[in-house]
Length: 273
Image 1 (spheres, rainbow, N blue to C red):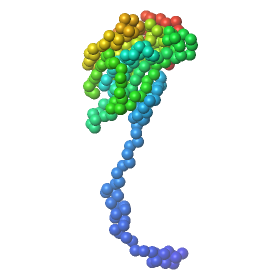
Image 2 (image 1 turned 90 degrees about the horizontal axis):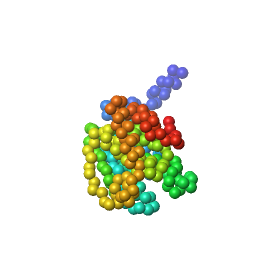
Image 3 (image 1 turned 180 degrees about the horizontal axis):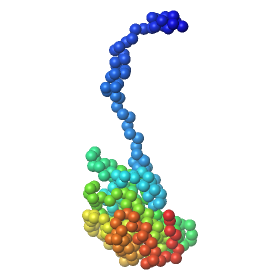
Image 4 (image 1 turned 120 degrees about the vertical axis):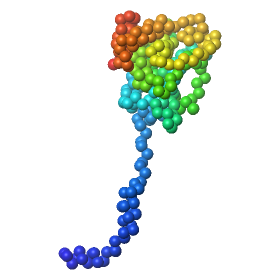
């Protein structure tokens, strides 16, 4: 046994000290560069252009993907379609989302928050009443997004003052929960968009930009003369503002919506948990 080991050692090549220095010692002093960090869950979610989420599912994604509140909303815009048909001057919200850090310049992603009606019944097909279909849609990098519709309200925040994404996601989800039914003159897209924009304007310290509206682009009005959803939006906003004075932070929303049920009852409301 010992003779075999001795024969193997004598027949082996001499130790190459230069090889060991290069492969072991040098790798210790100068480790190879780290592999790129995998894209975060929230980055993946925001890069999935065209993906549509319900308010509840969107809130779950934000809560899971951004638990430390790194993502913020720097712009909230209220848009109105100018054409009368086929969408009857539809109104919706667009949010600009970015990381709070500014170095390097962050990618800004646009998302669209919108209400339509689920056309499952004859009355829904006529646009009168039915189940509301509220959605959050990823539009993509703002440098690649073009919105031809008229912007009727525009709120902005600096990165150091901007609300975090989860805060506004909770607001959107709870506004949906408070009125899950679509009704043409009460809880239509006008009311949904107006409640979001007015609540953000009233409770968050934003800079408001005034946009001159044309005759057919009056906010919450169809063809300038026919208002829709304004009263419900005002009541919802007033309740949210009142609750923020007593219960600071995003946890006030459930109490605000519960109070809204008492002030403005709706026979066929379905509360979503």
